[in-house]
Image 1 (tube, rainbow, N blue to C red):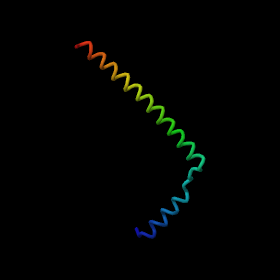
Image 2 (cartoon, rainbow, N blue to C red):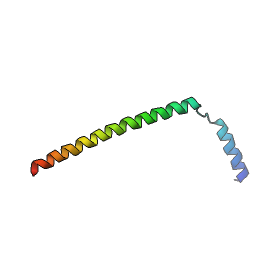
Image 3 (cartoon, rainbow, N blue to C red):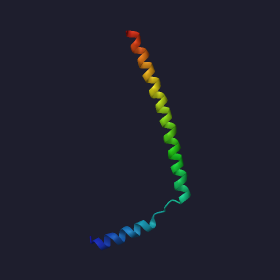
Length: 62
């Protein structure tokens, strides 16, 4: 396959793509950022809980 043919076919395929609008990209980005923040807070609290639980458990054996 020649390079010129390849580039023409790539261009033809990219013209078929339905690109998202700016509003769709912004709203999707906001959803992702909120989701990451919520899960980060949850994992932080879960981590602190398990650390305290393990310290308490280890103190029982001492």
